[in-house]
Length: 217
Image: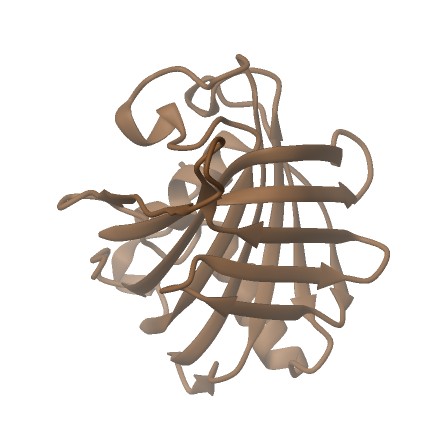
């Protein structure tokens, strides 16, 4: 994995809300160490950092998104990824997010995904609209000309009533508890391998806390 000596890493911590859509069926087999629904993986993940820092750089209010594609399961590697950082961030904040997502500053959530998706396209700086209500399993991601996702609760196919489900991973490296939703429609136009479109696939909404010591809360 792309990692540095812990003694030379920058100390950091971020707390916020993560919203994601992927191409698997509701529940996402990957969360249970099983193979992806259709044999390959694609995802759009967005993060709203409520509080955080990277060394002396404050990250409060920074938003970023990542777009991923793998020809097979994530663990087979050789995937593609692209980072989008909100244009309201400062150059220092952008550099911090780039360092984190490159997997050089510790924590499995960054180390694993960067190692499994070594084909990284140039970072995009653009306005990121991110709305979410985790309890209601509702969210919206909009990055003009790059990506969008509309997330709603899963509904009973007969009655139309909302169906609530959670995934709890006591030892999960990405989150501990995630609300599961329906990615009604999501698409990206982010370049080679990253032009994607799906309907009614898996969505997750989770509150996360990650830090440079490798812990997830």
